[in-house]
Each structure stands twice: as C-alpha cells, then as structure tokens.
Image (cartoon, rainbow, N blue to C red; front, side):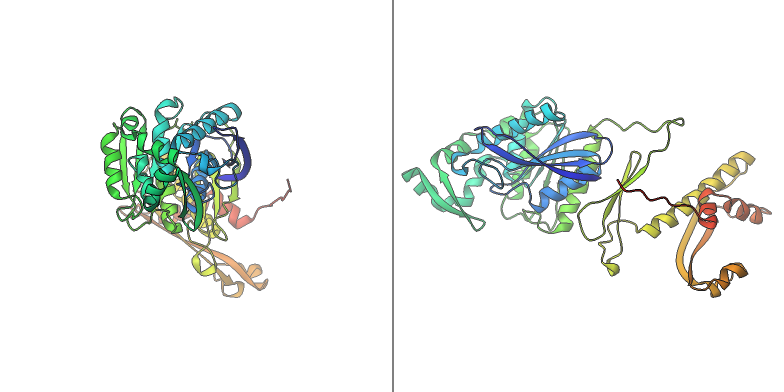
Length: 409
C-alpha cells in the first residue's frame, strides 16, 4: 500500500532538471517500476496516479516523472523528440539504480508505451513491460498534428494545438519519429509483455495493439479495455488497469517468503490511499488488500468495511477453530461455512444478553453466527460444535473486550 509519495528530481538527457514522484509502499519493497506518461501529458494524469498507487499497494514502488519540457520539468519541449524521451527514460532508470534500486518493471501510456518498448531491451534489470494504448510505431503520433506537417517541413517548425495547449513542433521531431523502427526493437526485447488497449480507442487504433503483439516474442499477453477511452478518464477503467497490471506482474517477481512459525506476527499497517473519501489499503504481513465504506455513507465500496472485516475475523477464526478440533479428535467433519451478520441493537431487546448488560441501556453490537457443515452436523455433536465455536480466540476477544492503546508517531 502507498505509505507516502515523495518528490524527486534528476537530470534528463539534456541536463535539464526533471520532476519526479516516487510512490512508495508501506513495508518492504518487492520491486521498482518506472512509469512513462502519454504524449504531451504529465506524471500526474489520472491513469499515472492510479496505476502507480495500485502497484505501490501491491508492494511495488513506482517512479513517475515528467519528460523534458512537460509538467513540472525544466527544458524546452520544442527541443525534444522521441529519442530524447527514450534518453530521459534511460536517465531515470540510472538515477533510480543509483539512489534506490534498478527498475524491474516498465509501464508506458500511449507514446510513453512506445518509449518503454524502445528502451526495454537495453535495460538488463527489467523483467516485465506493460503498455496502455501504445502505438506500434512512434511515427503514429504525427497524426495529432498532421495538418501542420507541411508547414513544419517548409519552415522548420510550427505552432500546434494539442489538448488545448500550444506546442512548438520542429522538423527534427518529425524526422526522428519517422526514423524509429519500433517493431525491430520489440522483436529483440526479450521481456515479458502485457498489452492493454481499448477496442474503440479513437486516438491510437486497436490495430496498433495487434502489431505490437505480433512483433513481440513470448511471453506476451493482451487485455482488452472494453469501453475505455484512450486517456482512461473514467476512474473505474484506470482502477481496472491498475489491478490487472499489479496481478500480472507478480508472476515475474520473486515470491514473497511466507512467515515462519518462529517469526513474530508483523503489525497490520493501514493507510489512506488518497482515492475516494474513505479508501484505505491494508497490509498484513505479505498480504495486501483494500478496505472502504459503502456508497450510501460516502465511500466507493472498493473493499470490505471495517465491520465487514471484524465479521470476517470472527467467521474465519470460528472455521479454523472447528477444523483444529476435528483434526485433534480425528472427526470426519465436512467443509465448514460460517455466516456472520452484524447489527447494533438496543440492549433491552437483546435476548442473549445478561440482565446486567440489558440494564445498561443504549445500543450494543450483536454478531450472529450461523455454522453449516457439508454433509450435515455430526450426529450427537451439535452442542459440542457450538461449544467449540465459542472458544475461538476472536470470539473471546469480542465477548470479553480488549484494551486499545493509542500512541502518536
């Protein structure tokens, strides 16, 4: 999960200071990833932020940066080209290796995807590459200012409007795009490749994804982003892409070592993700997942609520306790299912409560647990099953209460 995001800067291909952000996970870092943004975009697009955040929640630290002359980076965009973008990526990878660790993952969006495909083969540390809406040739980007190409060739440069902003495009930019043979570099890349592309992408057509897939060697995968637009402006699409990349790339990273019996249980770390009002990421040892609140209370329902997790803890503990008892007694016990519901009820209406508890007034938390066993309950053991269930540690904690100590750090 993302513990925090820190600012950084490094020298790009021309010596200009380039602005970067490092999205760092809580706990140990499984690997480093480098993210390249789309043409004339920045490191702070919705897609860049959400994908980086999701990878960080999976234990993967991400460096995303603005190419020369874009976003918060210094330098002149007019002096750049596709080759300089690749050189900026190389500089970012070298800075990352010097200050943290060499990147094992490259992620590129649109022309940034073409850039990571162009450089992946020469970065020995890289194991996996993911592209989003990437063109199969860098020259594809020329269609964004196609009406000005004649002026660029005739006068050496032209002012073009891209996404509501004015950029100076020089002749060398166009010539550099046309001279790049991306298919050849893809064929010699020798890295695991994930291609994500929207079938109805009206900026970079789906045929580009086919061309990249055909040029690449295995292992290669394709995921269709049905209904998404080129910039992944719908948060649901950006979240989906982030989750797919995080799951896919895990296959190409070292497996996190399981905790040994003698190793103390790690603290559970919970941190806000910055996505939505209440979403948090939970890390319990090597396990990571999201928690949230339902939509009707202002959440986005991207994960279980805190009380869902408490109910899950009771249910899991109950099933495990019954299984331990069955193994100890050598009982033939079918698979156990525990259904837990939680409500707040008036103490006076709680039939299961003691007289003292009912007399306190107000509301109390009531968990109802229903246990079912495949094949039915063992004959004559109904009461024993209920008795053993009540001995599960979480049940006892809920029933007897616990002391919560708060410290500020």
